[in-house]
Length: 513
Image 1 (cartoon, rainbow, N blue to C red):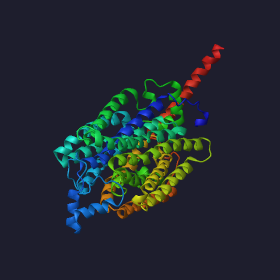
Image 2 (image 1 turned 135 degrees about the vertical axis):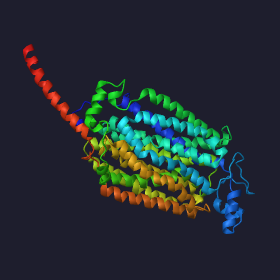
Image 3 (image 1 turned 45 degrees about the vertical axis):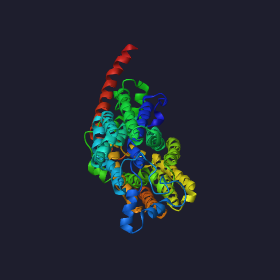
Image 4 (image 1 turned 90 degrees about the vertical axis):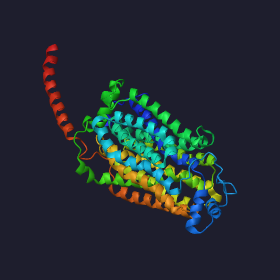
């Protein structure tokens, strides 16, 4: 039965919007704990006396000259004229390789739990899987300052375990949306939930810069403590107000439950006991989503982990400007992503475009616009640095179109297996998180604008490749392998029961007349 024949339950004040709101806050906090170190590390590490010496030893250029080359001719680098570090609260002498490895360590843990958590969430429900791991995220975040001060390997371990725990997030979210998001609300609800990371970026970049300067425990320590405390609070609220499916929710109305189940189809949201792995991995539409996810995330993680560093090294903003301006691109992406989901669902519901065409169109606009903008950023000098910020904002605005592209596409292809599908695509898409900071660090040894130009060209190439593959292979409809076999059997049994019940009811109804 299609949505055209179903009485719609209001979205506002519904249980599905409450779930989406809590998921939004949850993904926001996941990104706070993921990104906070990208800003904090600037405050944690003493500036370049050590790095300048290393450069002098390896290139024959004296340390002061190397700092000058990195600084360019405009702005405040945070280094005084005599080469001394102006951040007197910094505690560590980590070189650039150590910093890159610390940023990447999260993703080495993150990659391990993608597919297993997708299966667990589809089989047993995403609620408990996510809340347990968010509790672990909170602990790791609060312990990060202690670990960093004990030994760098302890800091590596804290970030690795944090990545392992956070890796369950988006497979769990997709598994739950597969059971909660009606057909013509998928793009909108998914866009809203996935706007959480954007606000997480905005809050982290903006507030962390201020905490570095004015926070307690040498400034940077307060970033981790506050992040962990908010995670703990979220776990408590999530535990008492959500359920894995409409059928298991205590306070949902019958009208809303019937609307969701009829719109998605009970067979499409059944508990998963069997997974058609071979059919999944030979599915062209799944490979389109894998490629798009991987290529998008290379750009995303390059900006996420390296944007504060780029703002400092190439554009020469000071730490207070850096935090605010690093958050601006994500504010633009947030505002655009809310509208993108609504427009995509409206176009589909009014039959103006097929779901397949909507997914391909929105994702192509996302990739092509991103490639043009990020390639252009590399052409901007620090004298025109505000133009570079504008282009970065425009780049992330184009990236928001993926909310109606590959991100929600998992729910179109297979609602029952959406968590598993996202686990598969996000496993591939985690690889850029491990290598993007290292590649960016390797390509910018002298911190010059010319080196950063190459970083952005690599990002543009990834986006262009993703657009081509997605256009060729993407689909938007329920796949033939996407309904669990046991669901088909149950549906046939229910139909037989309904027929038998109808036969028994008819005689009684006649006799009563």
